[in-house]
Image (cartoon, rainbow, N blue to C red; front, side, top):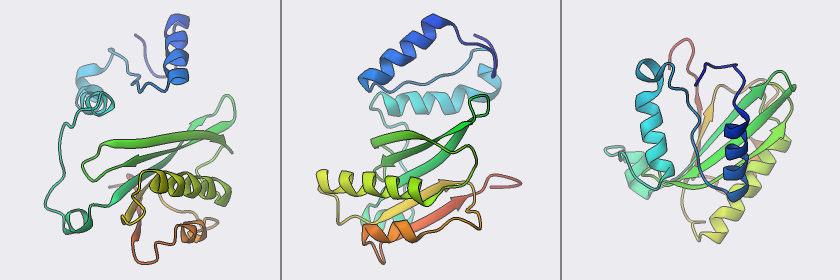
Length: 174
């Protein structure tokens, strides 16, 4: 119930904490604007988190040529607490979630080297454990890089010709 910015019921907060502690994927949404804004994106997200595959991308030479690993990166913000959350998700080329992680960081849109270093280490360890070191990597970064950002940490993956870094800028147009 409710809208963005309104207080969440304590029972729901306790449920969220319990799900996070157990590593169980979940999706937060409100019924208030269900039909106008969130129904379609929420449904596919819930399907993926439950282990389903609501769609499969095909026709792209990049994706089909070597079945890359896709890494999504984003920052979300809690302006009241003056902190941001750096999030990463690792997917296969069908969009199935293979690994996810998040941590608190400085409040702004900048992807600092220390956060990128951490993401690279998590990705490298995942690739080794999953025996996927030979796969190419496509990094989808939500937003644009700022002048004080660097791609240097990505060199630590040793993917010289097998790493694509894409900035996904949504405003004013995708």
